[in-house]
Image (cartoon, rainbow over all chains, first blue to last red; front, side, top):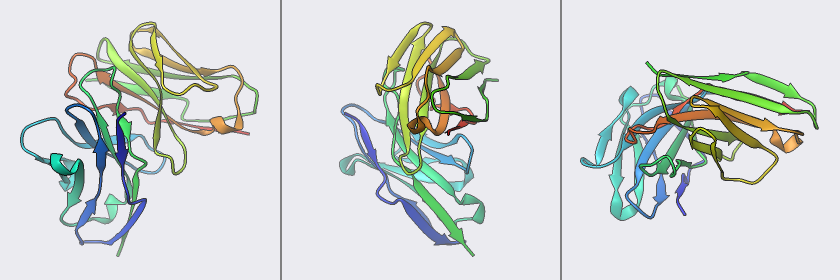
Length: 114
Length: 114
């Protein structure tokens, strides 16, 4: 069965510092991988996605993620964090068809301090 | 452009009362539709999904049911709410024929059962 592990429940970084959020997945076929961000009380917004091709994908808000098949990982990175990046981040894995819904990790809450 | 609507935004219901949450999508046809629940510290739990009218797949047997009476309408229901049904309910859609897209989420319904 597919699963996603986000090992860090809560991360605190200083504004301007770099960020890496970890995501490991388990999936029996070619994975479709996603990162979403959620502000308090809001729905989820898609940051970036990976299906195939270049293993380094760029997303919105200056985020990027790297797919490493050998490590079953899809870590999210940002070189310089802004206070507005404070939110909950979810990694998800799924398949191509509607019958393979996305499975989400439990999320990583990011706090940004001055 | 496509939009997804979810209502109500917040709901406080007594234990044992019925529930009906509605989700509609505009600007597309034959979408794949999903209901997720988000409880504190537990990430997103897939409840139901539908790939077509009248087609409902249940992921977690529990006190809830779902229906898809029209192509772009997805309803989450309960006959008698339990305290454990409290949570943040999110509806999402994905184009049925364009699986390379991720999900688009509604803004969610915060349900508190008292």
